[in-house]
Length: 211
Image (tube, rainbow, N blue to C red):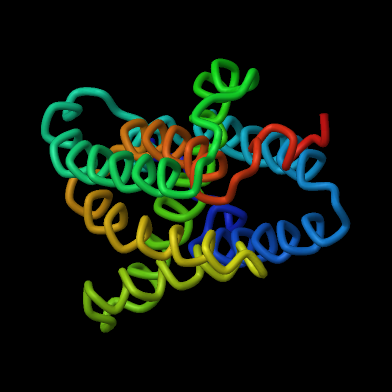
């Protein structure tokens, strides 16, 4: 017997919760509590994922937590990742940025976890639910809307807003085609690590946690 989907898993509820998380991100960042927000949001959304999967195990794969299509899902994001890394490295050399910091090894392990969670919110709960709620909207419009919303939550960092918009424009079509969050999340985390260091000239760990 199929389990009944609770209203708390409805597209409208999930999209609203994602929007609330985005607003909270802006607020906590303005308060200088970005690290606290990351921890709080991670606990809250991991709990939600666990609760939903416990009720509907098929959600796990449907959301994009799968590995059987890794080869196909890797191709385009990997090309974009390499191009972006080369571009950021050229910027770092041009402006004399530090190419490494003591926190980078930890960030390369930890930031992808936050990257997977962000991609889950943007793709599985954001873009997918926009498609469900507004089926008349074209695919490219969905891409632009999703990328725009992803960019807006990074106000007021102009360069970060531009970078996340471009990332959304590339990663959203990849997700709609392959539905693989692991690839997008890992690359998100690695790109974010070096974007902060090489482009924004900030240690991302210090930017989030202050130490």
